[in-house]
Every structure is written in C-alpha cells, then in structure tokens.
Image (tube, rainbow, N blue to C red; front, side, top):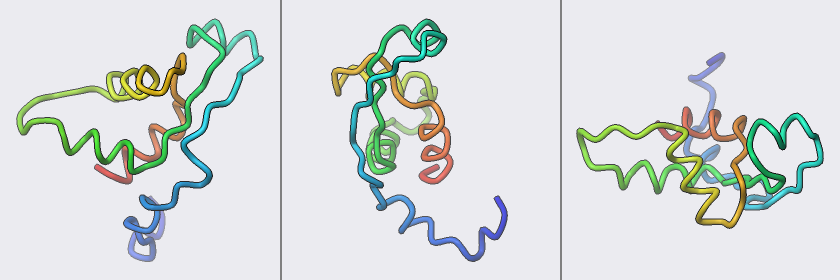
Length: 91
C-alpha cells in the first residue's frame, strides 16, 4: 500500500462508515453471480472479531468468512470489495 507509514490502521479498522447495512441489488449480472439481491456490508471490526476466533494453525478462506457474515445477517452475500479491503487491514 502507498504511504503505509502515514496510515493509522487501528483508526481505519474502527471506522464503521455507516455499517453494518444491507443493500438491495438490482443488477441482474450481480444477482446471478452472487445468488441473491441482499448484499451485506460488514464493518472492519466484524472481520477482525471472526479472524481472532480462528484457532492457530487452522485455515479459513475469505469466502468462508463472507458466507458466514451473510448468513448471520440474513443476507444473500457480502460486498466483495469491502471484504477484501478490510481483511487486508485486520490481517
């Protein structure tokens, strides 16, 4: 990442940016790709909490984390862009 020495990753992780929230997707291509219309936006702390629960030595994937969050929040899928960003922040 550019200018990492100037970024406060703890502040970024605690910034919820109006999340959690569910957005209804109307784009047919997205609905077909992800299998539904309800997209969940999870704040960075949700990812952090889940990743801390993974036992040392156990491997889980981003997809497993995203699927879990979607199911727990009664959504069809999670936003892939924020998931990728937030997992890099908390990792």
